[in-house]
Amino acid sequence: MHTRSGFSLFVGITLAGLYGLACAGGGESSEARSDYESASAAVVQIIARDSSGEEVWIGSGTFIDASGLILTNAHVVDERDDEYVDLAVAITASTDLPPELSFLAEIVAIDYELDLAVIAIVSNLDGEAVDDRFPIVPIGDSDGLEIGDDLRIIGYPAIGGETITLTEGATSGFLPETGIEGRAWIKTDAAVLAGSSGGLALHDGLLVGLPSIVGAGAESDEVIDCDLIFDTNGDELIDEGDTCLPTGGFLNGLRPINLALPLIEAAQSGTEYISPY
Image (cartoon, rainbow, N blue to C red; front, side, top):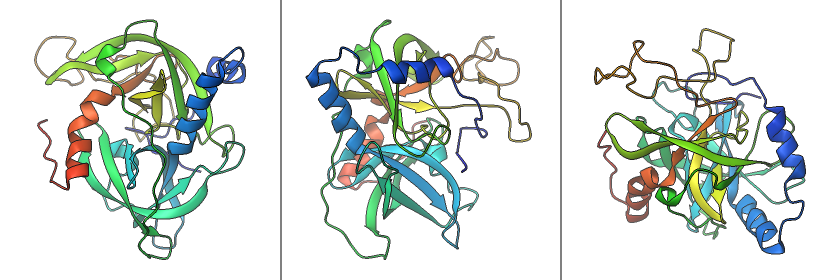
């Protein structure tokens, strides 16, 4: 099973995060459990497939509109190199079963600089139009997060089985990024497993961010739990001269949901999204 990360396949796994998963729900209220169940129903697995229908890579996404709009990472659906033929979507029918491959989707808005995208369900697997209504996760305000706020990460990891997985942690801090106003990244100690990239980060039952795993360069099997995402030397460029900052591994990086709002609005209105970045 292949996953699609920002720069390479992420092959590590954080045992502490899995321990948090095992403990999640202990002492939780029925209301909190309901939030997790509702959110899980809205999380999907996205499969980029070749001409023979074989998997090229996988990622996760979340229904944010009942008509079939799915928010994910741009690298999960990256079509620039024509590496796949179509995008198949598998839905969550039960948290203890693998997702059910059910639909085909197309990109309707994408921003490669932010690594964000919205895709839309266009048909079933036979190419027939569908009029299904899909479960969604309500959108929160990522600017309202503060250090110490709890976060739950939900997605379909390639490691640890084929079922949906929840890990938990705290909001560890925030990072800026040159050219982006306000918060560009949310730091968390919650484990983000390969394949969960593009899924959701949940706080108080609301979608507040998207997990994104960043590893080493494509030519290396070594996993590096950081990336060049900030102008640390002040030269107004983000390049090899800057310090590598943690966005994967123990401290993972989430894209704040507020950065995705323009893409979502464009997708919902049917207008073309043009990245300001």
